[in-house]
Image 1 (spheres, rainbow, N blue to C red):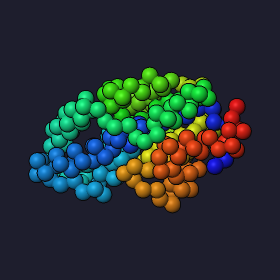
Image 2 (cartoon, helix red, strand yellow):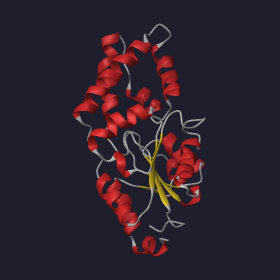
Image 3 (tube, helix red, strand yellow):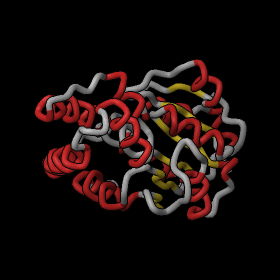
Image 4 (cartoon, rainbow, N blue to C red):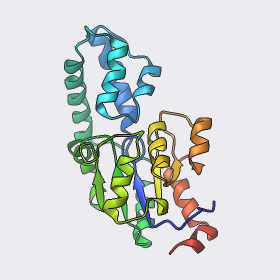
Length: 227
Protein backbone atom coordinates (compact mmCIF):
# COMPACT_ATOMS: atom_id res chain seq x y z
CA UNK A 1 0.00 0.00 0.00
CA UNK A 2 1.00 3.64 -0.36
CA UNK A 3 1.07 5.58 2.89
CA UNK A 4 -0.17 9.16 2.38
CA UNK A 5 2.86 10.66 4.15
CA UNK A 6 6.40 9.57 4.99
CA UNK A 7 6.58 7.51 8.19
CA UNK A 8 8.89 9.30 10.64
CA UNK A 9 7.93 7.31 13.74
CA UNK A 10 5.81 4.32 14.77
CA UNK A 11 3.58 4.08 17.86
CA UNK A 12 2.57 0.62 19.07
CA UNK A 13 -0.19 -0.47 21.40
CA UNK A 14 0.94 -3.27 23.74
CA UNK A 15 -1.70 -5.78 24.83
CA UNK A 16 -2.95 -7.83 21.89
CA UNK A 17 -0.61 -6.06 19.47
CA UNK A 18 2.90 -6.77 20.75
CA UNK A 19 2.05 -9.62 23.11
CA UNK A 20 -0.74 -12.18 23.32
CA UNK A 21 -2.10 -10.84 26.60
CA UNK A 22 -5.66 -9.99 25.56
CA UNK A 23 -6.45 -13.68 24.99
CA UNK A 24 -4.63 -14.57 28.22
CA UNK A 25 -6.60 -12.04 30.28
CA UNK A 26 -9.88 -13.04 28.65
CA UNK A 27 -9.37 -16.70 29.44
CA UNK A 28 -8.24 -16.01 33.01
CA UNK A 29 -11.22 -13.72 33.69
CA UNK A 30 -13.68 -16.27 32.34
CA UNK A 31 -12.09 -19.03 34.45
CA UNK A 32 -11.99 -16.86 37.57
CA UNK A 33 -15.52 -15.41 37.47
CA UNK A 34 -17.31 -18.69 38.40
CA UNK A 35 -15.15 -19.00 41.54
CA UNK A 36 -16.81 -15.72 42.60
CA UNK A 37 -20.26 -17.07 41.77
CA UNK A 38 -20.61 -15.22 38.48
CA UNK A 39 -20.06 -15.60 34.76
CA UNK A 40 -18.30 -13.30 32.30
CA UNK A 41 -19.75 -13.55 28.79
CA UNK A 42 -17.38 -12.95 25.92
CA UNK A 43 -19.47 -9.99 24.75
CA UNK A 44 -18.93 -8.22 28.08
CA UNK A 45 -15.18 -8.80 27.93
CA UNK A 46 -15.10 -7.37 24.41
CA UNK A 47 -16.59 -4.10 25.68
CA UNK A 48 -13.67 -3.84 28.13
CA UNK A 49 -10.91 -4.24 25.54
CA UNK A 50 -8.78 -1.15 24.96
CA UNK A 51 -10.25 0.86 27.84
CA UNK A 52 -8.36 2.44 30.75
CA UNK A 53 -8.74 0.54 34.03
CA UNK A 54 -11.44 2.80 35.49
CA UNK A 55 -13.66 2.54 32.42
CA UNK A 56 -13.05 -1.21 32.16
CA UNK A 57 -14.03 -1.60 35.83
CA UNK A 58 -17.22 0.36 35.14
CA UNK A 59 -18.20 -2.14 32.45
CA UNK A 60 -17.49 -5.01 34.87
CA UNK A 61 -19.55 -3.39 37.67
CA UNK A 62 -22.48 -2.81 35.34
CA UNK A 63 -22.41 -6.50 34.42
CA UNK A 64 -21.67 -8.13 37.81
CA UNK A 65 -23.76 -5.77 39.92
CA UNK A 66 -22.94 -3.64 43.00
CA UNK A 67 -22.65 -6.61 45.40
CA UNK A 68 -19.88 -8.29 43.38
CA UNK A 69 -16.44 -8.05 45.11
CA UNK A 70 -14.74 -6.43 42.12
CA UNK A 71 -11.63 -5.33 44.03
CA UNK A 72 -11.04 -8.87 45.31
CA UNK A 73 -11.68 -10.26 41.85
CA UNK A 74 -9.18 -7.78 40.42
CA UNK A 75 -6.48 -8.75 42.91
CA UNK A 76 -6.98 -12.44 42.15
CA UNK A 77 -6.85 -11.75 38.42
CA UNK A 78 -3.70 -9.64 38.76
CA UNK A 79 -1.96 -12.45 40.66
CA UNK A 80 -2.79 -14.94 37.91
CA UNK A 81 -1.72 -12.54 35.15
CA UNK A 82 1.50 -11.79 37.04
CA UNK A 83 2.31 -15.50 37.31
CA UNK A 84 1.63 -16.00 33.60
CA UNK A 85 3.85 -13.05 32.67
CA UNK A 86 6.68 -14.34 34.84
CA UNK A 87 6.46 -17.61 32.91
CA UNK A 88 6.61 -15.60 29.68
CA UNK A 89 3.87 -14.35 27.36
CA UNK A 90 4.25 -15.04 23.65
CA UNK A 91 5.10 -12.16 21.36
CA UNK A 92 2.68 -11.65 18.49
CA UNK A 93 3.79 -12.81 15.06
CA UNK A 94 6.10 -10.38 13.28
CA UNK A 95 7.09 -8.21 16.26
CA UNK A 96 10.83 -8.90 16.09
CA UNK A 97 10.98 -8.66 12.32
CA UNK A 98 9.18 -5.32 12.31
CA UNK A 99 11.47 -3.94 15.01
CA UNK A 100 14.47 -5.10 12.96
CA UNK A 101 13.07 -3.24 9.96
CA UNK A 102 12.61 -0.06 12.00
CA UNK A 103 16.17 -0.40 13.32
CA UNK A 104 17.48 -0.69 9.76
CA UNK A 105 15.64 2.48 8.78
CA UNK A 106 16.52 4.34 12.00
CA UNK A 107 12.80 4.96 12.59
CA UNK A 108 12.01 5.79 16.24
CA UNK A 109 9.17 4.02 17.97
CA UNK A 110 7.13 4.19 21.15
CA UNK A 111 4.52 2.22 23.08
CA UNK A 112 1.20 3.90 23.94
CA UNK A 113 -0.82 1.73 26.30
CA UNK A 114 -3.66 1.90 28.80
CA UNK A 115 -1.67 -0.39 31.10
CA UNK A 116 0.59 0.87 33.91
CA UNK A 117 4.36 1.19 33.64
CA UNK A 118 4.61 -1.70 36.10
CA UNK A 119 2.46 -3.86 33.84
CA UNK A 120 4.56 -2.89 30.81
CA UNK A 121 7.74 -4.00 32.57
CA UNK A 122 6.15 -7.19 33.81
CA UNK A 123 4.67 -8.06 30.41
CA UNK A 124 7.51 -7.11 28.07
CA UNK A 125 10.49 -7.55 30.40
CA UNK A 126 10.92 -11.31 29.87
CA UNK A 127 10.82 -10.92 26.08
CA UNK A 128 13.80 -8.55 25.99
CA UNK A 129 12.19 -6.16 23.48
CA UNK A 130 11.43 -3.28 25.87
CA UNK A 131 14.83 -1.56 25.35
CA UNK A 132 14.08 -1.45 21.61
CA UNK A 133 11.50 1.31 22.16
CA UNK A 134 12.53 4.93 22.50
CA UNK A 135 9.59 5.88 24.73
CA UNK A 136 6.89 4.16 26.77
CA UNK A 137 3.66 6.06 27.40
CA UNK A 138 1.49 4.32 30.00
CA UNK A 139 -1.35 5.06 32.42
CA UNK A 140 -0.56 8.19 34.41
CA UNK A 141 1.36 9.84 31.56
CA UNK A 142 -1.69 11.47 29.97
CA UNK A 143 -4.90 13.17 31.08
CA UNK A 144 -7.44 11.10 29.13
CA UNK A 145 -7.13 7.48 28.04
CA UNK A 146 -8.21 5.81 24.83
CA UNK A 147 -10.43 6.40 22.85
CA UNK A 148 -9.15 9.94 23.41
CA UNK A 149 -6.01 10.86 21.43
CA UNK A 150 -3.91 11.79 24.48
CA UNK A 151 -1.77 8.59 24.69
CA UNK A 152 -0.78 8.86 21.03
CA UNK A 153 -0.17 12.60 21.11
CA UNK A 154 2.03 12.14 24.18
CA UNK A 155 3.99 9.39 22.41
CA UNK A 156 4.53 11.58 19.34
CA UNK A 157 5.72 14.45 21.54
CA UNK A 158 8.22 12.24 23.35
CA UNK A 159 9.56 11.01 20.02
CA UNK A 160 9.75 14.56 18.67
CA UNK A 161 7.53 13.56 15.75
CA UNK A 162 4.59 15.23 14.02
CA UNK A 163 1.55 12.98 14.66
CA UNK A 164 0.65 13.25 10.98
CA UNK A 165 3.92 11.48 10.15
CA UNK A 166 3.45 8.73 12.74
CA UNK A 167 2.21 5.24 11.95
CA UNK A 168 -0.04 3.94 14.75
CA UNK A 169 -0.55 0.19 15.16
CA UNK A 170 -3.56 -0.96 17.16
CA UNK A 171 -5.67 -4.07 17.74
CA UNK A 172 -8.66 -2.59 19.59
CA UNK A 173 -11.53 -0.40 18.47
CA UNK A 174 -10.86 2.24 21.11
CA UNK A 175 -7.19 2.23 20.16
CA UNK A 176 -7.99 2.85 16.50
CA UNK A 177 -10.36 5.63 17.52
CA UNK A 178 -7.63 7.23 19.65
CA UNK A 179 -4.94 7.00 16.97
CA UNK A 180 -7.28 8.33 14.29
CA UNK A 181 -8.28 11.24 16.55
CA UNK A 182 -4.57 12.00 17.01
CA UNK A 183 -4.25 12.40 13.24
CA UNK A 184 -1.94 9.43 12.81
CA UNK A 185 -1.78 7.01 9.90
CA UNK A 186 -3.44 4.02 11.53
CA UNK A 187 -3.32 0.31 10.77
CA UNK A 188 -5.47 -2.12 12.72
CA UNK A 189 -4.14 -5.60 13.44
CA UNK A 190 -7.21 -7.33 14.95
CA UNK A 191 -6.82 -9.64 17.93
CA UNK A 192 -9.92 -10.45 20.01
CA UNK A 193 -12.01 -7.79 18.26
CA UNK A 194 -12.86 -7.99 14.58
CA UNK A 195 -12.62 -5.01 12.27
CA UNK A 196 -15.92 -3.19 11.80
CA UNK A 197 -17.03 -0.74 9.13
CA UNK A 198 -16.05 2.07 11.50
CA UNK A 199 -12.55 0.60 11.86
CA UNK A 200 -12.17 0.29 8.09
CA UNK A 201 -13.17 3.92 7.77
CA UNK A 202 -10.74 5.18 10.42
CA UNK A 203 -7.77 2.92 9.59
CA UNK A 204 -5.73 3.05 6.41
CA UNK A 205 -5.62 -0.75 6.36
CA UNK A 206 -6.54 -3.88 8.28
CA UNK A 207 -3.54 -6.22 8.60
CA UNK A 208 -3.57 -9.87 9.61
CA UNK A 209 -0.28 -9.60 11.48
CA UNK A 210 2.74 -7.38 12.01
CA UNK A 211 4.38 -9.35 9.21
CA UNK A 212 1.83 -7.71 6.93
CA UNK A 213 2.60 -4.28 8.38
CA UNK A 214 6.28 -4.78 7.63
CA UNK A 215 5.40 -5.87 4.08
CA UNK A 216 3.37 -2.67 3.64
CA UNK A 217 6.40 -0.63 4.66
CA UNK A 218 8.64 -2.56 2.27
CA UNK A 219 6.59 -1.93 -0.86
CA UNK A 220 8.49 0.07 -3.51
CA UNK A 221 6.00 2.93 -3.29
CA UNK A 222 6.31 3.18 0.49
CA UNK A 223 10.09 2.89 0.35
CA UNK A 224 10.28 5.66 -2.23
CA UNK A 225 8.44 8.01 0.14
CA UNK A 226 10.66 7.34 3.12
CA UNK A 227 12.68 10.36 4.28
